[in-house]
Image 1 (cartoon, rainbow, N blue to C red):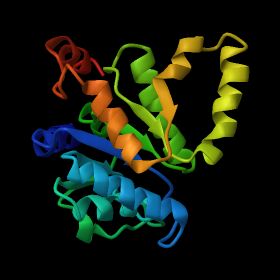
Image 2 (image 1 turned 180 degrees about the horizontal axis):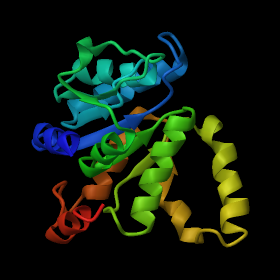
Image 3 (image 1 turned 135 degrees about the vertical axis):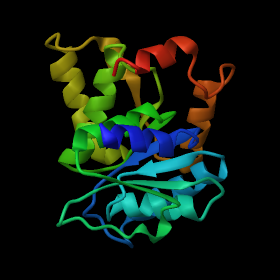
Length: 211
């Protein structure tokens, strides 16, 4: 409960924000790392705070890119001995003991999700957000997959198996989109909110209380 309260107080003014996810095992110099830096910098310069998991790899890349831009770079850090990140690029740095409270902060304060290639943790965050939006427990936000060659197999499998065997509806796959170009990612987020603004509506705020 203390984590929920303290994190909510620290994150309350960090809006609009985009949560970025990706592998902790991809190092500097890899194309995914450079892509994460570029996307985060463009989001930050466009006025979005960038929220990452605070770890190494693509999380570090997201924080570095955002830190070099105009808006805050936020790290939601969790104590994992094998994944210690560099916090020097985090303007706002929070610590969590529990995955579930950390995951809620990613969803609750995000105006969009940008999901880079990653492992189980990245898939967990992607599934969490898709489930919450699909079931109406969270408001609809852009969920953008970066790296079409990486994600294509999973998206095709979802269409063939999850939709094909009636596990999800065909329209549920429209909850996410794949975009590789950094400028197009920023444009897609602005286009989604065109005419309504980034602040949650009263109905959406009430819905988020029931997460």
